[in-house]
Length: 370
Image (cartoon, rainbow, N blue to C red; front, side):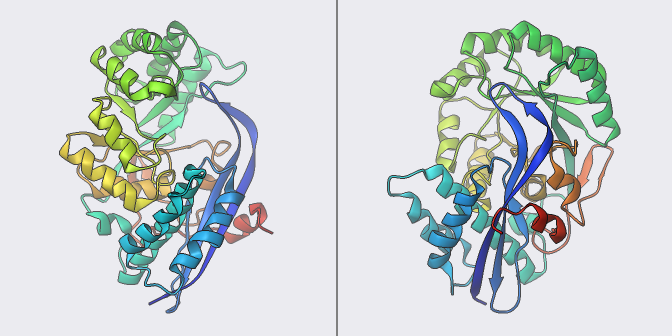
């Protein structure tokens, strides 16, 4: 079996409203679909990433720089192909883009490996379980949104089958965001999982103040509490001064960045994003480090691939998704055979590879390369 062709398809879907975190505003859903075809007729069908406004450039790197390195090679030799592609990141350039492009190809290669042997990626990576809890990413800042609205949103998420919600914080004062967390807890109920995500929104002192204000609400984790410039040191300080577990890793672009967080004593949970940092192969390395250090694994967004990775390992936690179709029309409408979600649990797809079948009418409507 040899690689015959590689196609990267950037997608952009305008959203009907703006979703805001502490330091960003989302008004479109972007991703990259990667199709790798083999000499014996297999074809990958998987998409990567939410932060893909630069999808055209990622597709250019995939097709123009990475494809020539692996065309004609055996797609099952994933580590060898990953090492060959990683060499592209060594010269001085925007390495984040390169790692995102490598992630697209690497994820497609894992999909092909599963298809070649007739099993899903979760089993290839370890097969620890075939179902796990799923939580929402929601609780965004929106103009005119009240505390009562936020509470009702949590109730709605529970009705949609979510086990919990990761609520956006870090954009207001510690006191104001603590009120939002209290409203979320009231709306979700006592057994609804509540995590909070500041997206690096606060200086250390404000993050500590906020953490102490919300400890009473049984918070599953506090994600990326502190500003970027010295985040590992700052998060370690927050971690020492709160009982809430600290989660980070989505802003890293390699497993070496995860090692930095572990060495600093900054994290209890790591949500390294395979689509931002080199794919499934690199996520597996990060997961191995976390396992031997007693650190739980999460994954930033990406339920279509995260379910397989997190189900594969004993220290996997929750799959994350955007249940609101206005926030993620891909998850809502592009997957023909979306995984079953009920009572807070997602079933890991059992089809070969990632088990995805995409609606190509929708893909062709929103692709940017036509």
